[in-house]
Image 1 (cartoon, rainbow, N blue to C red):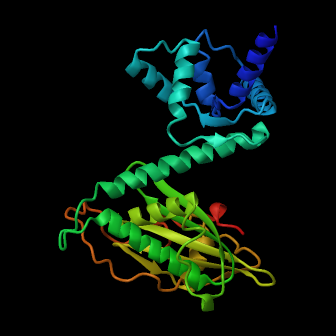
Image 2: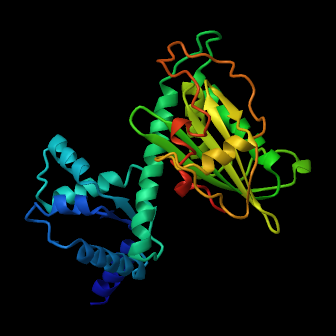
Image 3: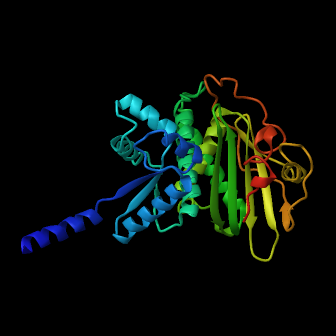
Amino acid sequence: MAYTKHSGSLRRTLRREAPSTVGLLADPEDFAAMTRYPSFPFEDHLTYLHQVDGLLRSLSAQGIHTTVVLFDSEDYADYCAQTGLDPDSPDGRTRFTAELAGTGAGLAYEGQPITDLVPLVIDETVRQATWEYATLLLAGLGPCADCGEEIGPATFDRATRILRDLLAAAGPGHHHLVCSVPADEEQLTTVLHADGRDPAEGPPETGPPFDSRAGLDFVTVLAAGLATRGPGGLVLRTTAPDRPDRVHAWRLDRGRLRPLSAAEVFNAYCTDAETGEPVPPEPGVDYCPGYPVDDTDPHHPADPGGRTGPGGDRPGGPGGPPGGGPGDRPTG
């Protein structure tokens, strides 16, 4: 009896040290697609979310580390077709969820209410997909037609220097940066928060945000925009005590990050991107010109693929500021 109790205690200890992964059907359409499988036990999305919330709380109460991943019904059907698994089975859903755990797009459960968790998991999945797309884009550019240096790594280093100089010149305060780059299949958008310091201290070389995942994402997307020499834009908004917020902006144009004038920044932020109608400026915001942070791009793709030409007069190209319009303005 003592041995049995001891064995049970050991198994419970091992269970606490075995992490769990929960696949979350965050989108109602994905949930509806799964209800066509008779083995799927839920019929109502809100009831399903409530049960997932209870499961996560139960696992947390047992001391079990849990990662939540986004469960996509179309990807699931493709996975089952490729592996020969029955999609109408708990085994198929379990194996697919285990595969998702290895993608790096999961979010650690830390007691968040399910209403907060759903958008966080979606954002994390989009962030991972954006970084992967930008990384593959950079990796496929090949060597410079003039000097033979690999364009991807060289442009990544250049984008890192640009970010360093942006933050150094922005000075003290909390900085919110948004970079948006149109790609063939989707809009690549990345956001970075950073705390600035006095320009007299010189530009930071390491530490946040350069050694953070958000910093890596931001530099990768910016590098992709620079290397493909297409349109895009970057906005920096600084919030500091006892002074108005400051907004600066740049546009990507043929491999360069070109500063916008104060008037161009104002027009970009005070024009509805869809209708072209003017919108009121935000109170307590100064629309400031961008400042020089980029030198001439020394590298030229062997095959630009038509990715040349200006991105228009607004950051983000003809579509307006990064994020798509005034409704997505960076806020402090």
